[in-house]
Image (tube, rainbow, N blue to C red):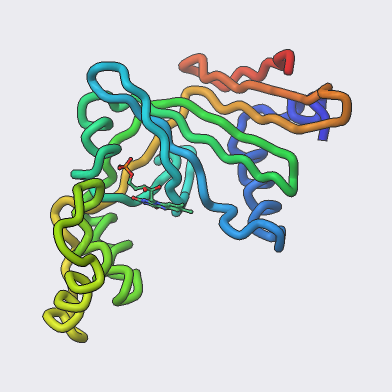
Length: 199
Ligand SMILES: Cc1cc2nc3c(=O)[nH]c(=O)nc-3n(C[C@H](O)[C@H](O)[C@H](O)COP(=O)(O)O)c2cc1C
């Protein structure tokens, strides 16, 4: 795909859906839904980590789930501006985006939580994400497993989804001789405006 092809799209959503589907059907990609989430704290210190994309739509944005009391949760509470980045090496494609993050509804978080397997819910309940482990994590997990044995584990209050609503999405395609293609879509308030950039 060349920049001229990307420029023919009137908005980034259709193209994102196409590339995402191609990534998902590529057997060389172990985690095509993995994306890097960059946040920053109140001092401006940036921080990045991988999270999994669980769904996306133009109305809601890009949704991932996490612990609201984690480092990223604290960052987003003080600065909701964030960035997401996918790099799919076998496709030699990158997508980066910037925007504002909001919590999704409690109802939607609970619905997703209840769809997760028992072991994922157990791990989510046990994990004080981003805090130091005191003692043995295996022991803490085993004790929780005995406690919750086959019971319904409720969605913790501090666990749920965030959605990033992008105001910029950039598509990058690698080519030989570093003549890579980049097209940035920015939302003007009314419509998406595409623009090719130097690589
Ligand atoms: C492939 C992969 C997928 C991950 N998916 C998630 C996820 O969906 N949600 C999450 O909270 N952490 C996920 N993690 C763990 C995070 O990268 C990170 O270690 C954790 O969320 C704590 O980050 P923080 O201290 O910056 O908040 C994933 C890690 C990897 C390597």
